[in-house]
Image 1: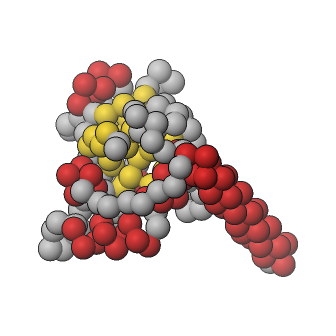
Image 2: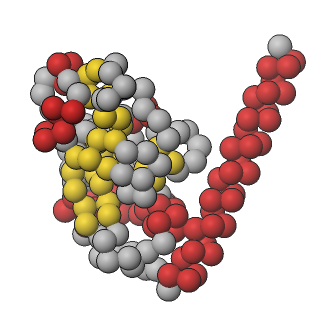
Length: 173
């Protein structure tokens, strides 16, 4: 139902990291927000020469962490490149509302499927075949849009309350 592609890294990565403004955003796990589902910035960039060894992603693409904190989905809000710790998920057939799909992929039901299928003895890892083999149930697109909007609004409210709580704590200190 979707196209799943693994990220990649130019090697050795240190030779491709750049501070040049023409560099390509290099999406790392640390760039993912604790709350929310959008990748809006990266701490590092890579040189354009590394593009052939990585996977380019664009606003509206969905990415899924596939190692360490695996199974966390995010929506790209910027152009960038992903390393092999990410999977790019593209809904080329338009079967899903993007916000709904992002929420669906992060549910306990999906995480339980990932854990049951994850390979590796010490560190669980996902790959495109395992993620592609999961089972999902989903409503019509019109209902997906309503569900996706609802959870996006809920995420925004949670983030707002967390910021207000941190501000309040800082004022007390």
